[in-house]
Length: 532
Image (cartoon, rainbow, N blue to C red; front, top):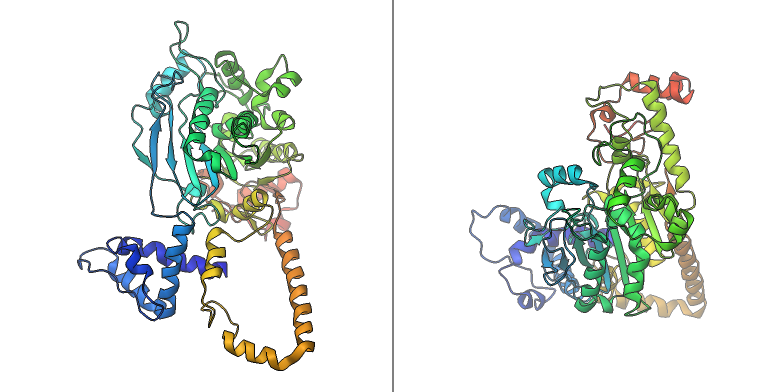
């Protein structure tokens, strides 16, 4: 059923621009027997001929269904393929690093009671030298001066139901990262430090304002973030939940952490610590914690009173978090590998046994650190950040996609989306276009002839089918998925790695892996090594 809906939705998305000059009311008022005709368009318009052909291929019944999909997207809150609009906190003392106003982008989806509030990531800085260099090469991460008026959403923030099947109709808020402090700081600018670090206070201001803009009517709020934004979710989620629950305690507030679960481990080789890219995670965060005046969970600070910087690391702070958290973490996170200095400045097509041993050990360390996390998706991929990628929903572990697993965790089971449930209610009572059942009238005649005995058999059969479906749903509804394949990028659903060393699957790769893992090389000859 859902596959048919998504196919039609893909056609509907392609036809959106064609219908843009036709009023919605004229489309909706057409009867099932009246084929849709695209509005007059100049023949030079790209893609229109192809779109018209797709319309004709659908036939009368398919076109009728498209009209109803258009109606349902309105009731689900999807009025247009709109971008997110910028809102600046103009009357606030809370600012970006350079003193310009902080802010956020918002796309409302009227009719939806689910909100996704997304924290951007992007490393950090911790002193005059590192922050000055960051301002030179990553200026938009320290200032709102050049932020565009509108932004589009991708991945879990996308409007496209094919790219974002479960959350396309959500209200979406995107909070740009301009505090360079992993969303932890409370320090204003002063004579001693020309930059402010106010990430934690920015979140307070934004969520307080969002409550006035409809967040108070939400049923579910997913606070998501990638990289430094993911770390920001970990250290702020309980306080954010308190702000929201002060308005309505019944709102379900959850945290979605993507690529923010770093390890405070020893690097492969030491380097001079001059910025976020060259410092080991431990060294860089220790420097930052001395400058940012971070606000961290009190329960975690009590565990590490003399090393509060430990609370920036997921496996350290997780036990202190009360809110429901879902962690997405590649076992071979590209940022963790970079700051651990595993690769040379100019990587070769082969790695030493020591490098491979460190990589394999890193994957096991990450996996072990996630053992106590109840909702987690950890593929054996060499990548960094997943949620904002168009293919985020395609990554799988044990046959379960990331999108399915998150939806299962967030909603309790894999249930119908707003669009699917509305579609079923709008399907005609006779001759359903996506069903193999007989027409309604024919079904009634057969039912009367079979009598009460057959009716009881049918009821029993339906009951058993429902049980089987329920078992199937619960089998697919898995919230703890840790990859078991034993080397980097061995999961065949991983996106293609952009690192030369990981795309070259050659004999050296096999031999080195075999040597490190203590396996006879001949036994690895038929292994699937993916990502190339």
